[in-house]
Length: 243
Image 1 (cartoon, rainbow, N blue to C red):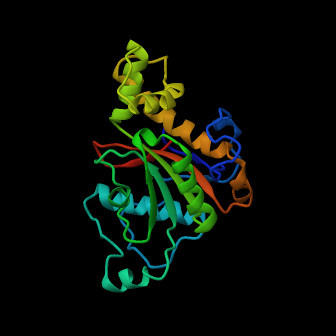
Image 2: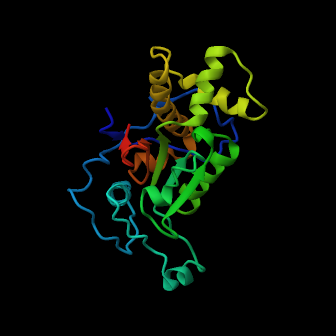
């Protein structure tokens, strides 16, 4: 169910209207990566070499998540020399678009350190101009080869959106905006908690599709320089699985 990931296109905040509804089916085709099978059993030591391809970036994240889930974190790249080097420049190897949930901090979940990840967080991984601009900055200006959309188990934003959709209840202030962005992902073939759970996955995939619908960076996808991946973090076992 959660075995493969497909390479897609993401783009900078479009001057043409960012959240249009040409979704996941329009993603540019590319190589298939597998997070779960990227490494053999056992953690690999962190190296200072920056991943420069989507495949290398995925392998680095997979190894880090394995360390996290097995309580073997290395807490890399926190030394005085690294901190000093980062005053000059940054070269993150992945962008993680995740939820604001306090239980899912990307640097911890993937056991990465200073300068490794460009993290963008919004409730339910909802996209807006600022989020898209931040992702585009990482891809276009910092040459990051991987964008990972990270949904998670027990997402409160998705749960609220499903509840509002079922009851017609108006949510407070700006929370209603979040629910409206998540609503198109609601899985109406399921009921109860199963509906929320399925919507979490569907929304991560849809968000990947929205990013893929932005044309400005499709050229990088076509040349294999960029992958956009949807994944899910399980709170129970702390594993990240691709969707």
